[in-house]
Image (cartoon, rainbow, N blue to C red; front, side, top):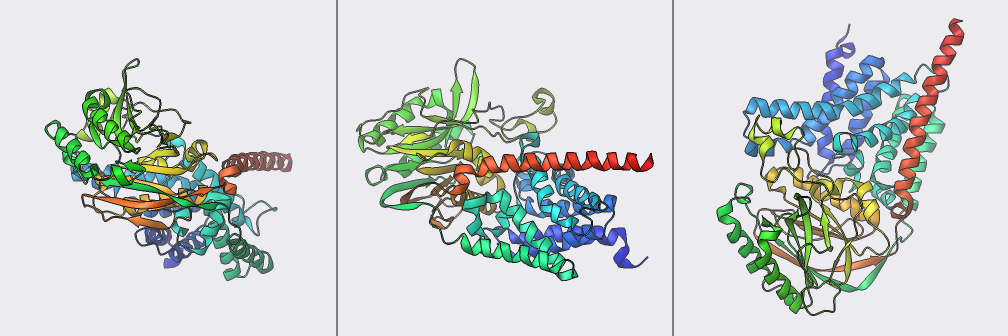
Length: 519
């Protein structure tokens, strides 16, 4: 057996191709690398048996996520209270779980090789099967759609397709382009695959022509406060008042010249009922200047005795009252729906919290808000909010955005992840949502990257990480809807239903044919 036929060699090549995928994402953003790595991945499964395809796909996924979400280990190591070996093992388990999905996609695709209908071009099924497995990855065990392939193309020409098809379908189109290119390289069905590749390029060019939304010429004055509070101090009871007063002081000069001011996720480190004196003070100041202030806070539902990771609006709600419109338990709030496992809720809590500090972090017993909630209203503007990694869930965003939505807002605290590439990836995900829905995106964070993103996904303004400062800028609203915001999520659900139906029907008739042949 030659080296190139060795199982270990092929697993290593698959793993390295997965590792290199990280270079196509922020902060590196070398989008052609994704094409190269996917070509290697496709070649690896093309030469594999069914079981080999599974292991090569799994190995590719293991490398992909080991490098791509290595920033998760920063929070586990620094705040998890676990030995290094245990924290690395936990990361390995997480990456292994995520690697199951590309492994499944590879195995299922190769399973069609022996069917006469597909045997000469079975790899063209890979984009559809990948779409289905990524659909599952975004939903199973609360879902984790991070590092979806489409994000690697956010600075490529193919981004023009996103207002039409969305990021998830862009991932499949990327794979389709790679499969067509692979078949051209190996000399199979050249006319068909050249046509597919040309079609993708032509569609990309045509998608640049329409203007899906119109931009208003009246700006909205926005300010965002980046507190840069150290994670180890955020929930220190002795520093609660110091932190709140810091935010108030940093905001003092902003009310007069801004329509909307934003503090980041859980900026107020005190439960809402106990923070009323501060909240009423800010509410009055903002209302007096016909401004609104949106802040992250831990809210408390008295009736159910439940805690929520929330956003509330202080100051002026409708833009004309000249006074603060906030009161405790009012409806102009957003409760986070997609909670972060371990960080915001702990499965089998009574047992898990005894194992390690990682499972007993401050504020790790939240309840989830409703999937669909009304937009926040701040100074007369309708704002669709997302907290932390909720911004990675395009389907949740779609459920909460309509034609009346003026702005998208995501708040986060990325201090958990230090100076890693996690916050840069997080920013690109926010950029993708802005492109999909044709709306400006405001991103307010504790320690960066705080930024304003326009409807094209371009960063209109930002401030450096790890600095206590404010960002002030004008934001121009848009009117109209992109095709994706109108029907993209519906098409996604229809498509994934058709894919699963196709797979089930194909398996059924294949088994039926085999039985008839044996009879």
